[in-house]
Image (cartoon, rainbow over all chains, first blue to last red; front, side):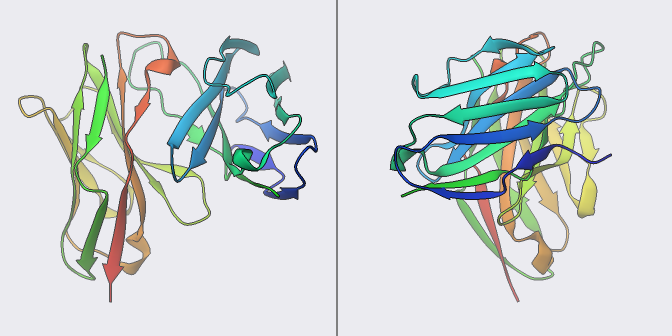
Length: 117
Length: 116
């Protein structure tokens, strides 16, 4: 199992530029999550999808952030325009719903380290 | 409403000594509880999870945790710390009665340092 795959691993960009982060979830998983991690706020859930459909995007900071999941094996998180306060680690994660309620493990990718200067 | 409290933001132990990372939770339903570990510049990795089976849960790398409903605790322990255990540890709670993942709550994390 390759795990959740994210790209790029590191990105440095200038303020105002568009940033696109990519994610490939674990095959067979029907949930996909985007999290952001910072020292100040810890781990925050930005948005999650179920069967490619966005379920809750209330964690998305503002309209500059958007996420898509065109198919079961690919998702993007886009920031346009980027600002220095967007500097953080962005994690993609996936899971599947265990109907016997045995506890739904969330599997994380290695993260995308974003620095906006 | 769910919540997770990790009682120590930072724990420092000597190599070879026991590790105790404390976690208390509140949950309206039967909770699932998890511990994740995050090594520097890495993603979060599942250490172990409790899902209403045995109250003592064994995980990877020699870690274990005990679910104590009366104390609403799920403390993480390891008999003997290794240098490679130095990392950030997150306690996580989710309600088994819920079907929405926004009910998964991550604790603020405990940073574990291991002194040679």
